[in-house]
Length: 623
Image 1: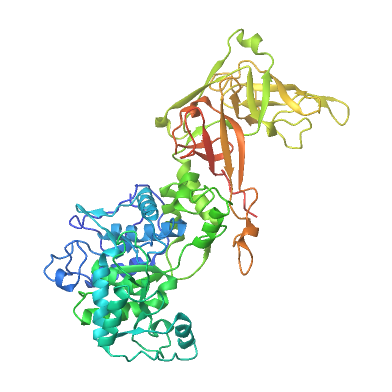
Image 2 (image 1 turned 180 degrees about the vertical axis):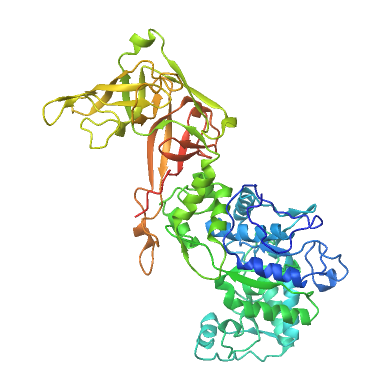
């Protein structure tokens, strides 16, 4: 079943061969998505029908004799490889790959690598890994649709030369401060550059010299010639090329000039025959330049029609997280977190290490929908989607996080010299096909410290010792069930010299073992999880929580570091069921009573189990 239903529009045909299919999982109907209406309308009108594409990006001449495109639509996910992807990117991935899948299209994986100073192969590799982990592929119909903007540098340079020749671009010698001063404001028109009307031949010569490294960084810039009085400041002769003497991670030192993003991006879309270029709302003001540039290059015969169209949607704004790359880098550099994959980070690698699943992220995207209205989504929506996904797939296990020893004082009377009594439980209460887990009850077990109280509060249904009541009458020790085992009655406790309880004493009530005819002979309200002292396995358990204490960290001029949650990570030595010693990295469990946990993908190893808390069983942040 598709995670993203196509709605009432054209359904993909067999010939379309829908691609980029994520891991299947049934889910509730998706929320509103205005982009589906746009795509369905374009398909109905045949807006992009009959266009040509041979699978290789190219200009108008190269596409003229290409076959008709097999894809009904084409979208793209175009990150810049200058950092690790975060949860906001997950929504863009889900949207672009999902729309292509659901409408018989293809989504391109494209690296917008036009800034040599910030881009690295490390980021390229991590981005590809993140997209694949989320369940998507850029391969379709036997072809890879993995592209790089840097592969188009030659065409972009040619396009810039055409604009100069057509009187639509010029080389400017103003410095950045002068250009900024002459740009104007929202209420005042800008001022023409002194070099705005320089002859095209002179601009072509200078542009070639820029390419050949004959001028220093910042000394010259190529600008489009549009309208310095435009109400849209982005049309006031925007810069389209700048000088950068820097080595590119793919192109090496071939180029000394690099295109601006606003110039490169529409060209990339057009060369790849993208139909629907989906961006976040901050690019809305850039759309007029997007359209202007593509129209001029098509008029010059450089790009084939029909041209791509840009659509904007509101980015994913989640409370209690920070997605600014600069601030995330500060968290890493200043050691507030252990790295980009710290389980508290909103990066894809961090969420994955925390135990989040691709299906949970997709489910959250569906539930929040797609709109043009900026709004904040409470983090609990994501956690709720995660719980809903893990509930049906995570095996259960008993774990004691705050251990207190429990001694069963009548063991020998009941079991003699037998050191253990076998117990069993389903791996999952609703999925018998997942099998059964087995473990042993022994004379001493670990229980949670909170499961014993010398003076129990009202309504307490766990273990408490015999004591005198307010009227002096004797109150018997309380009874509770050891889960999957026997009913026990508390008889007392042991303390150290400081008066701290070191062990709880209890007796087994005979013939009350779970799963036997006598199990219901004694009724109790309290059920206690436990782990054998002799057979349990010690494990490092990292109790992660939200990284920030407020919904909008660093709002206004406030220092976001002051909003860090001092309790976002707590490490304890816990005791776990012996079967968990065999867990593999990334295996996910529900630790009964405590929440969902995952075996850490970096530090977990045989003989050294390490588990991360993914999410609690219930939202503990509700007010």
